[in-house]
Image (cartoon, rainbow, N blue to C red; front, side, top):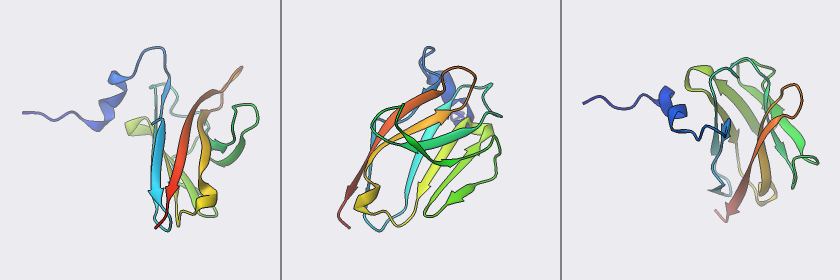
Length: 125
């Protein structure tokens, strides 16, 4: 039997939703946390970013890709766009309770950016 190729995960996305992230993720303090955000084909070369804040209008960018696949790092946080899987990966190293809160996976485009929120929880290590 053939397994489902990870690259075809977007077929399962609701048509109306161009970005899919988990509602909530949690990690242990001190650990490395990975967070995935899937997007529709066609957005490969767009700038993707993760920003932090309660609302889409007030959130501040933490890391961004500049449309590249090369990982980009800012302190303990890194982002990588994997075009073949239509997926943006956020990695937070050495998680601390200060990292907890609201984050947004975003795609920069003309007009309104595509943005979806995810809540990050940190449990004691």
